[in-house]
Image 1: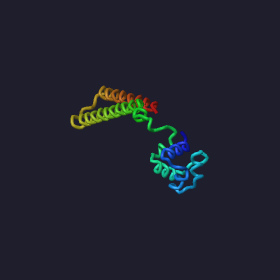
Image 2 (image 1 turned 180 degrees about the horizontal axis):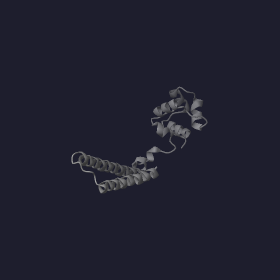
Image 3 (image 1 turned 90 degrees about the vertical axis):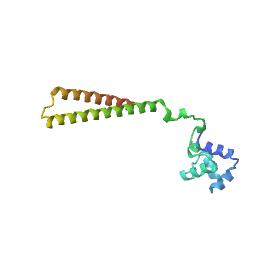
Image 4 (image 1 turned 45 degrees about the vertical axis):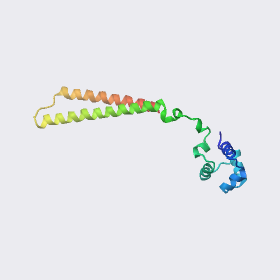
Length: 151
């Protein structure tokens, strides 16, 4: 339904004539007629006043569809895509926390070994940590690509 059709339908539901609605909005009857025919559209302020006068939200007034027919499952924040995105964001956060944890532990151990024990950190230790960090960064990269595809 177009805006003009909505205005006409809602006006008739409230048992108002074009003249009565025009008087309430302080406009001419011809203005209301033009809105209903679609040759003109009310400005934003007038559309808000129309919505208040006709007891509907601005969304209902300008919508092409009947909003009352929507169920919660039709709304975008209940879709599977959004749920999947939230799951992926949660995994991404866990991976980042893992990266920080491993990096922090390695930093503490290597500083402790170097300063307190005057021991050099073995190369295999560095390689092992770098591999773990590489796997974590790769997993984060693939998850972020999946997230990008969901948009």
